[in-house]
Length: 68
Image 1 (tube, rainbow, N blue to C red):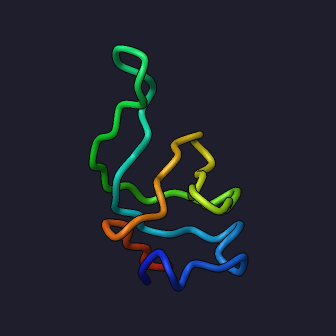
Image 2 (image 1 turned 90 degrees about the vertical axis):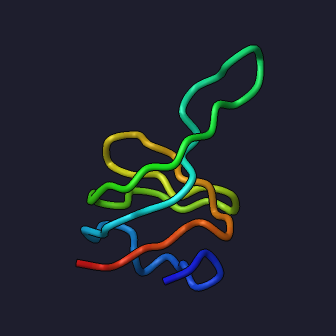
């Protein structure tokens, strides 16, 4: 599933998520890295997918979600 296809039905489901992760700040700018994890999605906003562990994946062309 790509970023355009993400919808509210994924909230509470266990998914494999791969994409760009907003991981704190470096020199006053958001630090972006690429990560791949399997977690429950707790929240979906216009710009982020937020997991149970608190990680915030950016909704962009690099985002891939596979429902487990």
